[in-house]
Image (tube, rainbow over all chains, first blue to last red; front, side, top):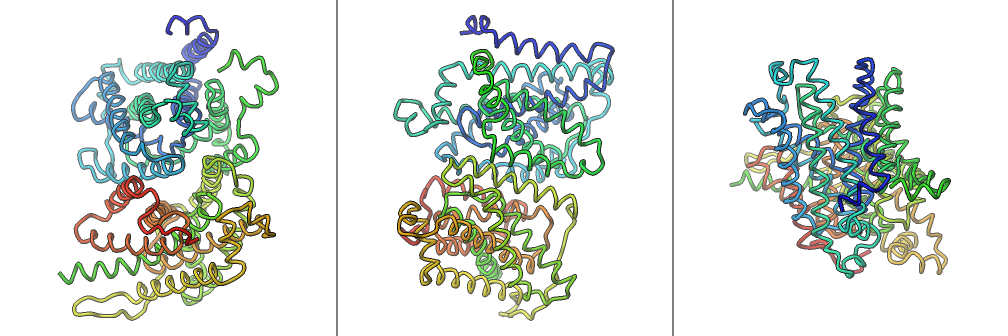
Length: 324
Length: 287
């Protein structure tokens, strides 16, 4: 399968995108561009992984931010209190959160459709209550990192570049993962669940196992992205880690680009990040970020449920064969 | 020992108000298979309506009930035309997203204007004392009003022509359409009633506890727990589910920190869904 992937043009398109992300801020040492692309990379990571649930299996996860926030907490705590190196902490965050998601997914795998979506809302509330009461993680005050932690990466200035490249790598992995799953038997099973879960089960798709598995897989890279994000700001607290707007924006981005497509979600993330950057500059809009996200989502859901890619596919049907 | 007993009775009083709120959620759910994710925010809207009617117009707290009921109904009808009408009959995923989007807009405006400051409406009513324990008058009156409104809704659904039309549409929309019921109008009315109930229960909760713009999330989650306890689309079950949840809260509160209550309720939500997919108090053909 892996050799097969190398022969497909879409694989190389993803690789090109990653290369552009990695190289363009290096030209002229453009820190401002780097910061904006870093945020776009986080959006793409969150939205692509959310899309595994939303676009493939047709399951809404309102709690995707939990993966990001918990990943951040585990990583920061390991670096700060246990003195682990960053790389190992990130890996532990990813594995830890995925495992939790798998256990939880197996617990609620009997819930279907809307009930599953409702229980993901509950997960956010429950995890937040846990973290706020968990003393080793600083309760509601959070954890601060000292400047020392950047020393192994060659000082704060260089560390920001290292973290940026790691974020781009996580974004790239998310895109490859989305693509690999879409072309696999597992992905086909998920798409079948998305279309008609009963029919899929009758045809032999192990639906509960697939759902729990995709829930767990979609937790891994966002947890690592969370670790990087909060390591970069050297500070984490519950209000930021489980920020409702980020989880919402991931949904908006996935719907904007076109749920179930790999390109659309990446495109949507990039466009949304640009739009957001543009709006945040204006004083009036910066307070009403959620309002804009809400209006955008409502318009997409009501009038353009297949998103940007739906529009592009209908205009240029032949692109459907190249752009997944 | 009497302490727990008092706590449980107080829990049941508050639980009746939760039940009323869940009736609004379950009504919309039962009639058109739409889960209203603005429910929590509509509860908060009821709280804020109470606050401004009391502080700006100087109304006595309970006089806010009729305007909140009417206002909630109108908001609900508007919500139907904006976010629900195009979603009826489409996968549940889409109506979840559309009501979620409206909720974001409301929360965004709310936090933009009022921030997350704590609001409080002072209600002074004489309480009822048993031995060393006093049950606050506001809790008793809120529970009584909730029971009264719930009874009125039951009467409406079972004894009036329009109420029967609502139940007919819930039962089978196409058949209802065939016998001449204007289903779209009934759907809009149902969302109106659902939101009005959310607003009124918010107003009643506002007389009991302080609140912020973001208080709705917790109450919405309670609404879901109550709804699954009572069986979907079953208003009577919802009231009983509310009482059951209040009972549980009352029994648990003396032993567990307040911030854990939501976690316990959420675990209950998942367990009930797995054990009783149809609801604990489900009865066939109630609605």
